[in-house]
Length: 130
Image (cartoon, rainbow, N blue to C red):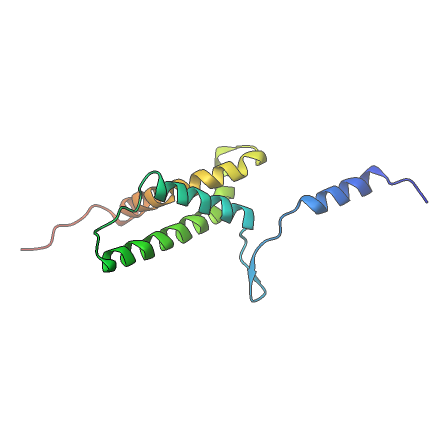
């Protein structure tokens, strides 16, 4: 049996390290599952510790509305982290080992960042005519 060469060992090592992309119905989404999980964890920290989605009241309707809003914020933050973290790392010229930490940070701050971007793009608020 021949000795394994360094290219064979490097190929096997690289194949075990790669993370598959998510796909729905055979369509690749371009999102890595590890980035989604890190962004989801960051959004949970923002919701629980930073109270980014405060409760509105004590009735069951308000609790249901708050719970649904928190679920959508967590989902949107995870998706934002999954899509924007690789772009943010390229823009900031950061090394690859910081990818999951950056995804955690993007997931934690996604709600505030997205709201400020929407305000900036939509322009100043106009007062209604009287």
